[in-house]
Length: 131
Image (cartoon, rainbow, N blue to C red; front, side, top):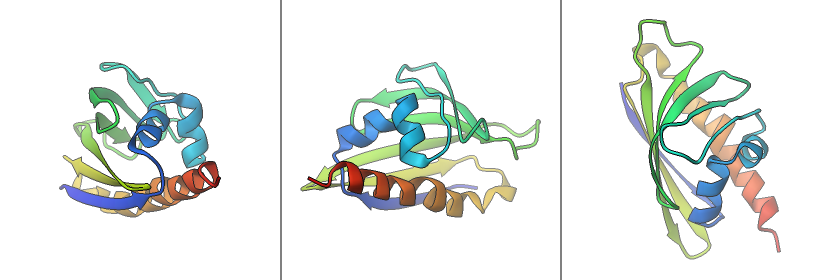
């Protein structure tokens, strides 16, 4: 199973990219504890370890590709993959998330991206960029 989700965030692509790959900022941006890296090949965990994976490809300020799995995955299920694409226009950035190789049981992750990532991110950057 795979799907694509898109959202608009009032922030620069650089702000979103750097926050996604910063332990402190990722945690603040989503509200869940994260340990992340901005280096290819390094592992990450988010949401107190509920999500884990590895950085596969990083193009500064435009693309993040990570292997991704939650603790709900069966042991024999392969990691899924997320691709985060950032496209900046005027005072906001379009974030496109391609989530591939999702287990058939993972339909609810779509809602999770909105509730636990996109909505908190929109609020976080709105406050951050209020001036």
